[in-house]
Every structure is written in structure tokens, then in C-alpha cells.
Amino acid sequence: MKKREKGFRADLISIALPVTLQSLLQSSFGMVDQIMIGQLGSESIAGIGLGGKFTSIYAVVLGAVAAAAGIMAAQYVGAKDERGMGRSFYLNLLVGLSLAGGFLAVCGFFPEAVMSLYTQDEAMRAQAVVYLRIYAISFPFTAMSTIMAVFLRCVGKAAVPLAASFFSVLLNTGLNYLLIFGRGGFPAMGVKGAAIASVIAQTVAFGVTAVYFCRDAVFRSYGRGEQVQAALRLTGEERKQYLGILMPILICEFLWSLGENMYAVIYGHLGTEPCAAMTMTGPVQGLMIGLLSGVSQATGIMIGRHLGKGDYGKAYRDSRKLMVCGFVGSVALSFLLLWLGRYYVLLYNVGAQVQSMAYLVLVAFAIISPVKVQNMILGGGIIRSGGMTRYVMWIDMIGTWVFGVPLGFLTAFAWKLPIHQVYFILSLEEVIRFLISVAVFRKKSWMRRL
Image (cartoon, rainbow, N blue to C red; front, top):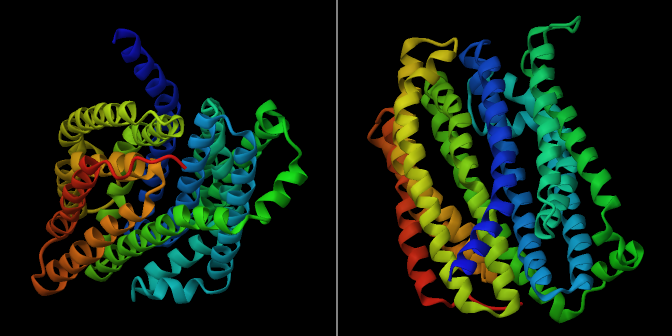
């Protein structure tokens, strides 16, 4: 028993710790970036927030492809199927690059039309358009580095994406300081400078990841050309299996992201100050979720490996342990946020009313955060690990579109509640998703081998 517990802890730490550190780095430096932008005033904060909301659709859709890749890779590692690993890598890479090209075209040619859906405030929209058009250049680099990172984690090389992330966020922060404020001989470019810094940082992250990835012995053990051709020539059964995994995740994540963007539309139409307050809380929310995202990603890999070996009993037992780890960690972080949140909002160059709005949103987030983390572990890790992604699709669709979006419009425009109450009430959709997810988990129908 002790040996088994040590093995569980060792697996959790080896996978979760690098992912957590990577997320922590990105979120903490993102917080620094947000504070820098915060010195430019409410309009710049709100503009980048709205532009970032649309780019999050791309990030979420790409994340769906990465999730499908992770499910396949984890099970192929468990089954020691190198040929399957190679084919799934190139297949998911091609899909990711196709998505990047589509989103890049939309952001490059139609940014004004996209941002007009979020707000009618011309000053806010102008800032968002500038940010969106430049930031979209990073999409292809993000696609390649994301898919590579998934496979490196699944073969025990999680430190590589961590190193790439470290160099990326460090560079991004330094460039933000130089380009936003015009230091070191550079002109002060404001929002445009922030976007340029992000593009350069994402390109560097891709470069670091690609250099190691291409040199890694695991991925040199078979011919690349052969694997690319094999990925493009799937049999009918293989294509059906792949689409059966990918499409529910893709639909689920797209509709969830679309729902999140509907929330952004609600905030955007409430005015510049409420929208700025919500944007100010983004880095903190990302930091808290990032601290426990390692557990979620470790869950998918660990449970997927067990299922790949056919060890269903261990998969179920470890799933329960991982849920407990996530709950304890999220409750501790929520108490920490309640204590430090009031000091965080004082870092922004905005009015007292906006600071007060932002802190109350943080309080609402602290209350709902433990449930949100359980949904990450259950839906994002455990239930998906067996390839039964359609379960998660329906759970998220019900939570977001049956409960979250209608409650958002009702509280904002019919009841005209303040921003923190709107946010808290629409976030109760997390509770609905959790209750359904627990029922699915207990039935064990998600446990299967590819």
C-alpha cells in the first residue's frame, strides 16, 4: 500500500509540478503585464480585456485539439504504441495549424466587425482592434508549441514546456515595459506595444520547444515523412475514433468559449468601468486556476495511462484522490484571495469605484472557485481520459447555455444588478455542471480503453 501511495505521489508531482509552475509563471507575469496596462487607464484595460476575450476562443478551440491529443498520447504511452504516438502527433499538429490559419484570417481582415459585437464604445473598441490584429500573428506559433508540449508531457518531458514558458514570460514582461511605456529608446506604444511583446514572446516559446522536441530520441525513432502520410491516410475506423474524441471536445470548448464571450458582451454593455473591473480580476483568476491546473492535466495523463493498461480499479481510486487534492488546494487558495484581494486592486490607476467593483468580483470568484476546480479535474481530466468526450460536451453545454448565459442576461439587463452579483449568479452554472459530472463519474461508464 505504501509503495502504491509513493507511486501515486511521484506521478502526480512529476507531471503536475512542471505544469503548475508553467501556469504560475504565465499567470504571475500576466498579472504584471495587466498592472502595466492598468497605468494607462480604464479604456486601455477594458480594450485589451475585450480583445483578449475573442482570442480566448482560439485558445480554447486549440485546447480542445490539445486535449484530444493528450487523451490519445496518454493511452498510447500506457500501451507502449510508438506508431500510434507518431500518427496522433502529426494529425493533431495539422488540425491545430488549420485552426490557427482560420482565426488569423478573421482577426487580420475583420477585427472591427468582431469587436463591434462586444461594445459600442468607440474608444474601447479602437483599443481592442489594435490589440487583436497584432496578437493574432502569434496563433500558428502557439498551435505548434501547444501540441508539442502535450506530447512531451505524456512521455515524461514536462520540464521542457516549463523552460520554454519561463523564457517566454520573462521576455514578454521585459518587452512590455519597454514598448508600452517607451523605455530604452523605444517609442511609447501602449496597447500596440503589449500586443507586439506577446507575439515575440510566443515565437520564442515555440522556438525553445521545437529545438528540444526535434532532438528528442522518442520522436526520432520513426520516419517523419512516413508518419505524416500515415496521419493523412486514416482508415474509416481510425477516422471515426479520432472524430469521436475530437469533435465533442471541439464543440464543447467552442460553445463554452462562446458562452464566456457572451458574458464579455454583457460586461461590455454594462459600461467601461464594470468591464475594466472584470478585466482587472482576470490575472488573479488565471493565477488561482493556474496553481491547480497541474492537477487537472496530471489527472488526464495518469488516469489515461491506467486505462491504456486496462487497470480500471486503479484509475477509479486515483481519480478520487486527485479530486480531494484539488478541493483542499482550491479552498486554501480561496481564503488567501479573500485576504490579499483588497490590496491587489489598489495597484491599478483607476478610480475607487472601479477598485471596489473589482474586489467584490474577486470575492465572488473565491466562493465559486472550489467548484470550478472540481469541474476542471472531473470534466477536463477524469471523464475525458477514456475518450468519452461527448459526456463532457453535454455537461458543459447544459451548464453554460441552459443556465449561465440566460442568468447573465437576466441579472444584467432585467434585474440590473451590479457587476459582482451578475458574475456570481451566472457562475452558479459551475454547480450544475459539478452535480452532473459527479453522477457520470460514479456510473464508471467513462472508463474504457482506446
